Length: 74
Image 1 (cartoon, one colour):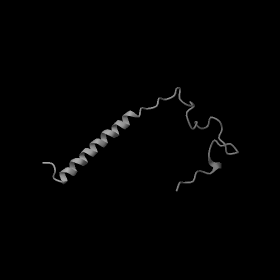
Image 2: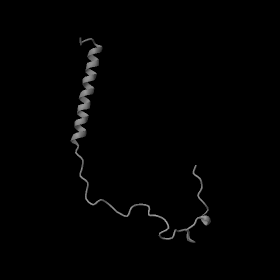
Image 3: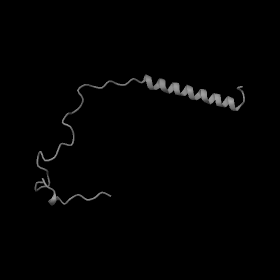
Image 4: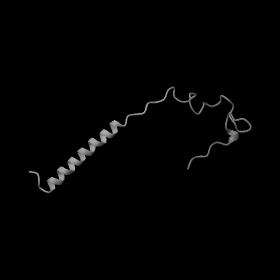
């Protein structure tokens, strides 16, 4: 549960309607909007290659332990 805020009458800088005078608070976000140029799309080759290499290693290890469990390897 969050603590309640101060009473509106006790908060400094509020105008009678409850709004804040201009320049009393900083802006919520920066004053720039958007990027200056479009960002390039990342390549999909590296993640796919990494997944293939990991799959080969996992399958190789699984085959090794399966053959080891069946005593087919010396």
